[in-house]
Length: 298
Image (cartoon, rainbow, N blue to C red; front, side, top):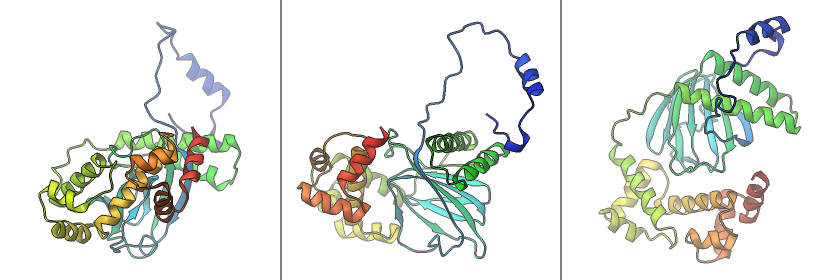
């Protein structure tokens, strides 16, 4: 689909010529089906203008429960997602799913302009989706230009929000078309360790995470496991386990997969009180607010 500049809209005559090239369908019940892509919701656009704003070089990673589309418009750098490097140059796009540790390295000094589009896709399984990269085309630049105009208009009407969602969806489709085939080499040892840790946490949600048990199951001493994890990811393994459980709980609440009590039990919290206290400290909102937000978007 081509997005035309509003000032270069086609004339009725050119539209008539284009319509004249349409053929009679052989089957009136079989057409082009939409791609299996959910419409983004609760969209937020902002930019980072320097390595300092991106917190380049800090060992403290970002750990969000929203989808993050990063578009490098000026300047270059590397985004590390769960330990894997994703170099970005001007025109590159990177989609980071929720529940991923990511931080920035080697960002250009001086003028930088990286655009961030964050949003929610409640029905997507953020635990299995992988980060994806691609490059902007002429079409995706036009789509992004329209999206920025919609955002800059500050129009909060439902029709404007719907148009913004459509444009972000089109950007995601454009990213899919330009994403290279998955020919990635086997993960490095530290990245494979994180994969194994995530798998262990996912299979032990119903009980509080015991790092000693995790270390035994992974065949590594607990002290060595803690040291490797903090050295590579800049965060303690205990904190990572707690934040992972909270973010998985947030996804369940958004998708209406149970009451607050049921979700707390399913994610290994001993009581609703401890769940609410930890959830608020890590995510900044209460479980009830998260559940109501999810109900409003379903």
